[in-house]
Length: 416
Ligand SMILES: Nc1ncnc2c1ncn2[C@@H]1O[C@H](COP(=O)(O)OP(=O)(O)O)[C@@H](O)[C@H]1O
Ligand SMILES: [Mg+2]
Image (cartoon, rainbow, N blue to C red; front, top):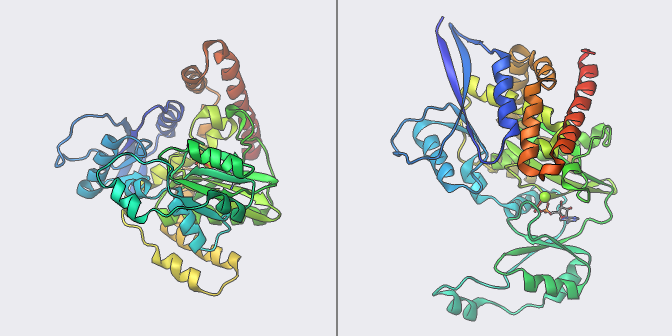
């Protein structure tokens, strides 16, 4: 029997905790997956940043990338490796580079999703360039910011069209505040968006391949406490709606790891931020939810590597638009979009694969998160983010929440 070793590359920056846990869990799984007469094994390596010949071969079968959205050298290596070497990468670097929040709003509107009314406004200031003056003199029309505000209604949100990490986001109550915020906005191109207020539930739906993990979220809590430990906060119907919405957007943009935010007002979930294709994966944010996210990453990446899943660099939107054209009630339409997503994400084959080859994962992860190694991963991450005098306290805090996860997980699996 020949051994075929698949190499999984981790393209990392500041991430500390999930890569260390991921590597150790894959090691503990001792995978040897039969494939014809061969057995597939896995090894994990971390990518380094260095000069490269565009023609040099690529040693990875799959890369889990966390840098593309800001680190061009790694992104461009990945692009060449997809094109020249057939590399599989999470997420699609072209899509991530080109599709910002604005495009996701437009796409969701086209698919009939209840995105709050949104305007885009030209920037307050411009970086100087030779063509700037004639362009603005000829074509920039004076506009009345106040009337756009009145049209949308207050309160509203001003936020960058390509935003992330809450940078430049302002809640605006009246015309005066709107003008003041615009004055401050500099060269950034902004959206004005109707506020979803009041809302009674804020959720983040974190998709990883065909898996969707839904968490209640509270943006008003301190950073370490925004992801809530809560159960049964949506019924089965809402869960299906959120899952279908998240899978649809992710498959539409070729994002296999993405976090989608929605606010519930009445019975409607309004998507407000569905373009986060390098989601927060830190134990210091996810705490209780962290082990499940690591598991989801292990499952999907091992599936992609073992089955030689083919990268689809080009997006194909037409099948979604075909469904959009049909005169279906919204939920049926959404279900039809999500079925395209499940097909593209091989949901059935993935479930079968996990059942056959990864049935020991739950128990391995449950045991792993009791080890000193796991605790040390938490400690290291806390040390990198918190002031020295808070390190012990917060290490205990996050470790305690993970132990609570072990308790609920142990009960679920019948291990305790
Ligand atoms: N339309 C809206 N209605 C209510 N709250 C909003 C709206 N848009 C943004 N927010 C609030 O502002 C936060 C940041 O906005 P978001 O669009 O998520 O930007 P970012 O990409 O920076 O995360 C959200 O988490 C939410 O709390
Ligand atoms: Mg957000």
